[in-house]
Image (cartoon, rainbow, N blue to C red; front, side, top):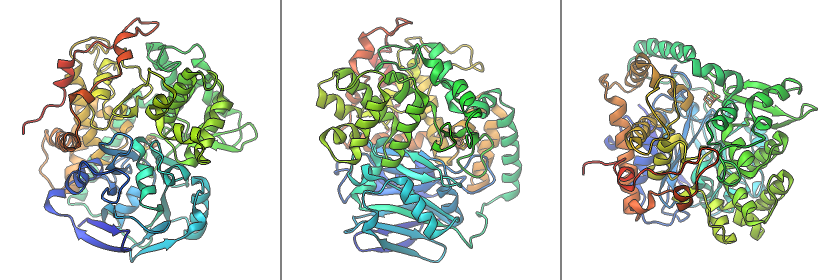
Length: 572
Ligand code: SF4
């Protein structure tokens, strides 16, 4: 039976609770959002003591289901002022599941900079001021040396400690690479609680208990086999997510020069194909890397310099789009080094990329100047005015510099897909309770759905709604998004996915399982945001997407407000 571990940081106390009925059979985003909506006042200050920070393992965490180890981090967001979940791969969720913990809830505020260690037998509070202002790489190195290879680590960098609104939460992979729960400034919530790191050690634990192990084994095997047979996955296995650079550029929606163009003339220089070719000649580079045990795809990478010194793992599409084309930076090494800097400081590469482009538009630095971008972001770790500005994300940067074209919704920057071409994605950016977030429902064209026209100005709301509930359910299962794409094209795989989930929870198998799960998550998130003061006026893209045509397609975002407002409708 899974438990909730509640940690009172003010009193330095903890307790294990049985899962109350309202949280039963939930995990991942479904559980973080339910806990936040039930236990955090919607109008509270996100960096105040009433906010809670939740780390939740997905429903499938630690089982034989493929790609099952996403960790959901949830709180009220200081960036959007709404409910927030961001998730990352790594080892933490699977270790929590083996410890019998569905979620850890951090409550109150620690008086001193603290770390928490969770093992099978105890929860320990460790005060250590020497870690103050330390970057994530050194924190992880030191904690690994102290606590050993069985540990998995959650940590924040200096940006989180300074409560910068674009700060992220770092999570370690099995080989102690950094994965980021990047979005929404959740690192700042951890910093506001004075928690530098959480160490999770599952030594001495047994396999995760599930209700129907035989059924799970069969369904997990069939699901893994089906994922690997999907043609989409082959490209991801070879090139990782950077394969999207050339594809999205060809479609004409790769954000370029602060979303003023949809194609980048130097896209090839930052493409997955170029990256993999460069890595082939670089010692210690890895074109395939798995961010978690049980991943059947391996879309991640380890990117090194010419001498074989590691720069970053993994260099991903969103970073290449937001810090690359969107800033007109065409040097892969420059982007990789900025990525490492963001990882070390604990910053979201996406919001920071959008912020740098906004700063470039203001004239603060030159388009394409990767070295100047690095120097500006570095200031976020030094607490200068410019550093605080950029570290608070693209909206704060745009407001401070007087830039009118700020690509954000609800305070969070858009992802690396221009919504004037991908209009279903634009509806998701507009209406997701998370703010602009592609992982909540990215409406890409697909050979499996040839009738879908992503550029049509009507018919986008149902597509976005379908994807939003589907991925809310996926985030609750704790499955990696890429493993969740093949079931969209292959009905048999959808059945296997549902069978995996109900084998764990013991619920009856039902075709509507994922719909019900996903819609219940969205409903609870939307209600929280409404209580926090959000209205349909907040479900809008910035004006310039509606008025400026995007070269080369000449498209604008022209989905009507009535259609946008019809996207997420729930019965009271
Ligand atoms: S496919 Fe990529 S993101 Fe997903 S689990 Fe594997 S390495 Fe991690």
